[in-house]
Amino acid sequence: MDLLRAMAVFVSVADTGSFAAAAQAQRLSAVMVGKHVRQLEERLGARLLQRDTRKQRLTEAGAAFLAEARQVLEQVRRAETVTERLGDGARPRGHLRVSAPLTLGTVAIAPLATAYLRAYPDVSLDLALEDRAADLIAEGYDAAIRIGPLPDSDHLVARPLRPYRMMVCAAPSYLRERGTPASPAELIGHSCLNHLLWHPNAGWRFASLGGEALRLHGRFASNHGEALRRAALDGCGIVLQPEVLLADDIAAGRLVPLFEDDLPPPRPVHLLYPRDRQPLPKLSRFIELVMETLGPRE
Image (cartoon, rainbow, N blue to C red; front, side, top):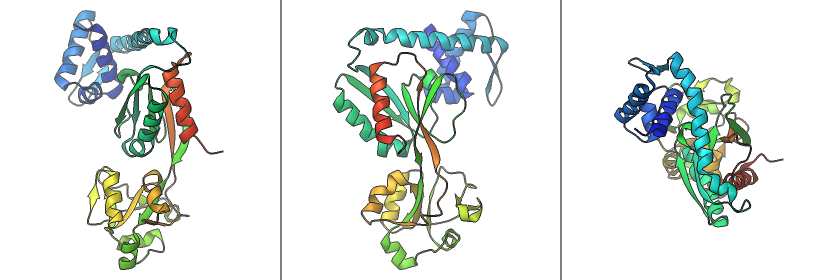
């Protein structure tokens, strides 16, 4: 039995609430997650999780063990980086793991990561792009970019970045053919490009409509923002997507922005990293680059 691995899996189950979610986070099968937890319980001689058909709940023993397990895993993480701490403190080196949302990560974080690697040749970097809130501690990430409100945490530092603004756009060819809507309410008569991962009842929301959701329809939908962007460029409809994805097309005139004074409210964006009294140079330099590139404008 790999005790440390089993502890990491248990922490992931506790944080995600299910074997299936922990399996995805730990890149294991759900069967292997269950095996690790059972072996840990056998070793400790105590039930750590109360299982039912939908989710796992901590027992009293499990809650007590969870707090200790977090500390042990953090100590192990720090021990693994001791050579980096003892080396040339001014030179970043080692391996960095970063988590980011798919669209923002592809458009903004990936170019930043390659610039970072060019500047620091002794560092390697994994960039995991997925629209899921990865558990930095349990999954061993050094940093993460998050969109939206954050839960309170004593374990993480949150640095604000520029807000995540949405834009409504259409290609000039579409507007010539179908006309330009004068207000969000007129979108009901247009072909709109919807994201498949958005909740069906979420709709598109605008300040002028008092927060009421417009449930709009069109002939094309996708689970990927880049596919929706391409459809908009080809004149297939009106798109609602992040400014960071559409900015170059707007600047080049390939897409025309609509309702610029009546857009959905922007969402907060943060850079998260574990609270550490002495962050490694590889992380410190990455934080500096992210803040310089994506930090709030003064």
